[in-house]
Length: 105
Image (cartoon, rainbow, N blue to C red; front, side, top):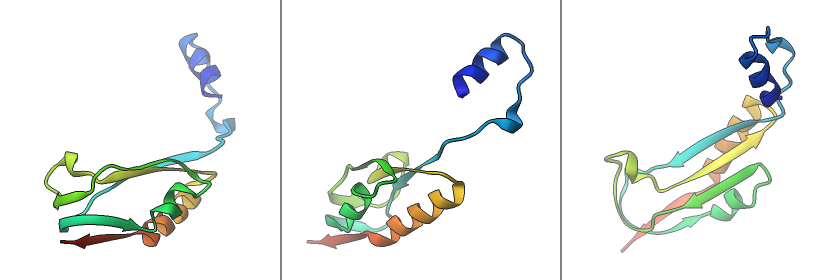
């Protein structure tokens, strides 16, 4: 595990990184939008929060959205965990495709 590897490195021991077994890969995705207007709802958000590979997900902004102007214009995030990088990508892309931002007056 990573703790043991850290201890071995601190003690100056040679590390056997080829036989390290990773249990999962995590990925963080921050939701942004270049659209502007009054964000009323996020259709399909329940698909994100109820997915078994989603470790954490929050939607942080509703109301008037002014587009993507800075790092602070994030609308929310999700953290996905899976056994491989490909699985993380597949799950994340599927979840992204399952939501739809609804703007109105």
